[in-house]
Structures are given as C-alpha cells and as structure tokens.
Length: 327
Picture (tube, helix red, strand yellow):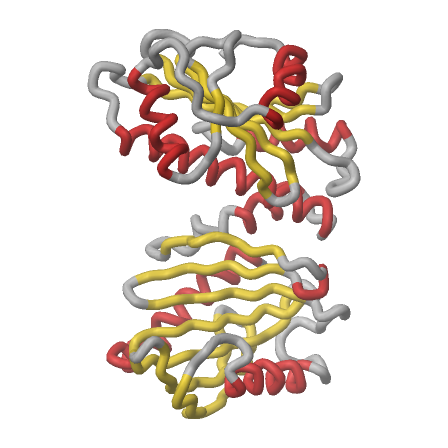
C-alpha cells in the first residue's frame, strides 16, 4: 500500500478513537474475509473513508502500540502492514539501533519487509501475497494474519531482549525464534520474558507427547559454567522443592524416582526424575540444571509414563541439540 507515513500518523488518532464495523462500499472478497477473521478473533477494526478496500486495527503487543492495515494493493496483491510506534519510556533504543535492527531483520527473513521511518520514528513491517480473489478462503487469510502477527510478536521480543538484556541482535533473534533450527522435529510454542531480569526467560517445545520447558535466568548473580558453582546445589534443591510442593503447577501423587549427574554434549548437569499425575494422566517429569555463559540453564521435560523407557535418550538428544546452538 503506497501511502506516506505522515498520512498514517494522522490516521492514528482516528484509529484509536473510532473502532467499529461500519457498512460502507462493498469490500473485496479478501478484505471482507479479513474483516470476518478479525471479528471471529474479537479484534475491533474500522474501514477508513479515505482508503477503499482497506481495514485497520490496533493492538497492544509487549507494551508496544501496534497498528495493522490490511489492503488490496492491486487486484490480486493482498498485504498486511504492521506499524510499530516505539515508546522511549518503555524501550530505550537509539534510532541508529532501530535502523540496524530493521536491516538485520531484512537480511534474515524472506516473508516480510522492515522499514524504519527515521523522521516519524515508526517501524513498518509489511507482508504481501498474491491471492486468487475469485476463490479466496478464510483459511488463507487467517494463515496470513496469524503468520504476520507471529512475526511481529517475534520482532518485538527481539527488541525486548536487546533493550533489557543488552543482547546482540543476532543472539536475540535466535532466542526469539526458539533456536528452532537446531531443535528440528520439535514444535516451538514461544518464548516468555519475565518482568524481572533476574528471572530471565523461558521457551516451550513439544513433540510426540513430550513437553519441554527451558528456563534461562541469573537469579541476580554470574554463575560458573557447568555444575561447579558452590550455590548450584542449593538452586537445584529449591527447584525440586517447588516441584514437590506444587508451586510450579498443580500435580498430585508426586514421587521422586531418583537423582543423578549426567554429561550432555560436554556439559555436566544435575538431574532428577519424578512420577506424578497431571490431568488424570500418569506422567514422568525430568529436571536438568546447569550453568552456561554465566547463567542458569534449566530443562523441565514431561512425558507420558508409557514412554518412560525411551524418555532419557530423547531428552538428552533434545538438550544436546539445544546447547549446541546456545553455546
């Protein structure tokens, strides 16, 4: 969609104050389908009077104010553009750093285009796809919308890590995308950044009944790599007590099956194995903890009890692939 950011910025006030579903000129099938998808998802939108065959919506994602515009640029070219308005009170990144970040994203993705508008301090992330307007389906539009929203959420996660953890952009990008390229065969379900920097962040992966949660945090200190830090045993015991007490999640019939030390991909771990009941199912839960790059690295992997015989081998293969990239 060819419009200046100046026009866009003037539209923001209208977007914020006048969401609704007004009945104007007939929308094209792709835009009408997009409106139905947003309505189904509970997202308010509007049809701007100055832009036919266009709908706009506003979101709050990771403390950023984000605006979305869906439009037919030509008869067959459908686009979704996300506009991010960086708030200096929330994330303090210089304009040069934001420009560098956009350049990095453009060199590492094929599905979107990042543009940093320097004078107006707005980041635009655009997704364009040729669609068959005669046979447009809700599933196609829904997929484009979800894919683009996932991408913009990843981008804002990267910004968060660069700001709060002072991470290099490349490392932040790798974490925000779940190091998924080294964990092939596992589905990445997202990353969570906790409010306190001491608590760090966590990632979730799933595969064939396995649920793997990974926690990377500091607890306010720099740790010696491996399990040689004098405070690591205390941290390990605190993790186990939290599991046994049910503070982590609601379980029943929690029973410790054993503890041991293991070496995975050259790195020593303290580990423990539990049997427990979750949602009326008997499962086995494994805890692995070590330190790497000055931070604690904890794995919590849960699997159905019927897969106990193969679980440790699967767990160690997953951990090995993860730390290979994380190192």
